[in-house]
Length: 246
Image (cartoon, rainbow, N blue to C red):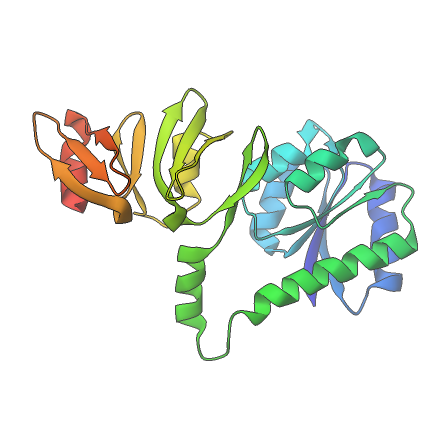
């Protein structure tokens, strides 16, 4: 049974979806809670650990895209249910399963729930019985994380990233393929979504993937040379931390 949460600021719409799911999707979906705003939703998601979110777009004091940024968990499947067609493009940029316009069509609800259940079951099938620990370790290292860019959402694994450079409230990622991507998250936010110790901050403007460090070039502060030949400065304040990890 798939655990789901509904985020919607109108109580009659919360009640309607609960009724429709009970009537048409009771064998697939268990609605474990509802929230009216993004802060309540964050707490509810942390407590109930759902696999699927039904999201209205416009909420009390914010919107669901802000909620998605707050929870920063791209393993959750998302179905938008809203009265506004204008958010459809943005919804699919965050890899939503579907986008339903109100009033809710029973047929549309069944179809998008089936798609969400299929995606979730496919993910679950990748973890084989008796392999839980290694599967979790592999998932942690190899899971793809979605990031917003000005050109849409890109999905990256930790091993694809060489370095992260600060650029105001944004960050620039250098990838092993040679591409540079500007993300709408700062360096700290990018570091936090990957396994601990994957990246080390060597400068207030730079974080490096330790797996892609070729050598350290000593000096008063020094430089690190990465696998792509790029040299990144190591600040005096960060030098000791880097050398301990290196």
